[in-house]
Amino acid sequence: MQIAGKNILVLGAYGFIGAAVTRSLRAEGARVSAFVRSAKSGAQVLGDIPQIQGDLRACLLPEDWDDHLQGIDCVVNCAGALQDGPADDLAAVHHTAIAALGRACANQGIAVVQISAIGAEPDADTDFMRTKAAGDAALRASGAALWILKPGLVIGQSDYGGTALLRMLAAVPLVQPIAYPDTPVQCVGMQDLCRAVGQAVAQDLPQGTYDLVEDTPASLFDVLAETRKWMGFPAARTTIAVPGVVTTLISACADGLGHLGWRSPLRSNAMTVMADGVVGDPEPYRAATGQSLASLPQIYAGLTCSREHRLTARMSLLMPLVVGVLSLFWLLSGFIGLISISDAASVLTDAGWGMAMAVASVLFWSFVDIALGLAILRRPWAARACFAQVAVALIYLLAASFTVPGLWLDPLGPLIKILPAMMLSLVAWPLLQSR
Image (cartoon, rainbow, N blue to C red; front, side, top):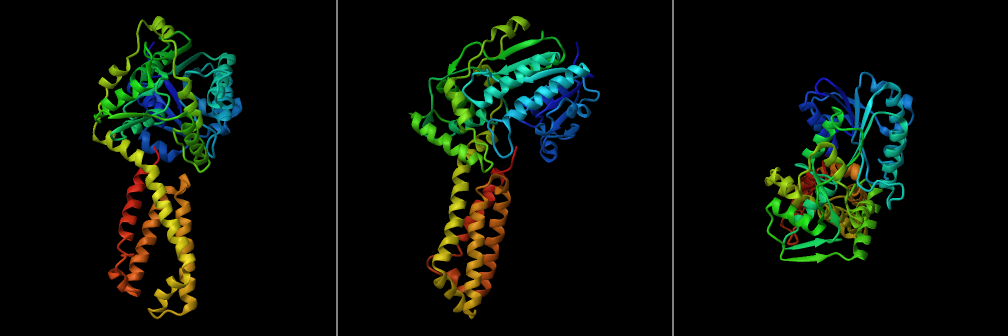
């Protein structure tokens, strides 16, 4: 059966897997529609592919799907979230909405291809895996034509989640930090994953559940070493095994930052999955297709690593430090102004300002500095906070140049030091762009 001419709806279409699947299906001649939560992100990632804007958290009943499924032959669900947070609800996204989708598709005779996960079982250690398993079970019970694909660690030309974390760790110079180095991992290339989706959509693959993994597991240490080699980074001189207590502390911090909108791949769900390993059974897929999936060395041999991949890995590694330094800089600037309000106001009174106006100015701008230091810590505001920091710094430079130009010659260089702070904010801005 052919893919060409089929009407396919892809959920989570601008995600790491979803974007690749969407492009692959379109290249095969399918008429693809993208179900996206953010129209802006969808347009940036998917270009001219038709979009349906919607939120899985609002599609919890079969009738909520009826309008979205008009004229659709098959739905490919690539949507998912790692952990509950301000913008994510695992139970809704992985289970409730997908159960409703399954019933709606069964009623209309629409097939479903579900991208699940290795380890998605009802008794799994994480709510990510348990909710994924609940969604899989609901789809099986719906009666819709169904293919459930469970990929291992997905390696693609772009990166996100676990793949991004691998590249960030590979970018650490001289040493190689790693937690759970002996954990077994089976990978799958994005090309093989997209091929399996295409086989399911074309119904060239029998209905059922398939683990999409290479034949032989490798240790996480070996996977990281292979990633480092592919990226062209020198081999590490020494390896640092991160103790479990440190990993737990890092995960707890990442979980806390999750409440501020930061979707770190170091959150506890990801670390628990990594501790358990990513191991599946390649035999059902091999028996159904007569094909084995590419091994990790073969996957990397088919991908191009260029300067932008290395730069992205290095800058992603530095991003938490950059954000932390900017936050600290602006917070300290504000608090020091409040603590030393008399000394700060005297600079203005010496220039002819009245005491009341000078004190009011110091108070106002100190609170602006503190607000900017806090704003960059909240992920949805962070990129805009960088621009605000640059704008406020320019105000300081221009105002000081006209009011107290002598500060340019101050031995401590208070105005000169604003310049690198501005540049750091400008460097941070592209790092904070969403996918």
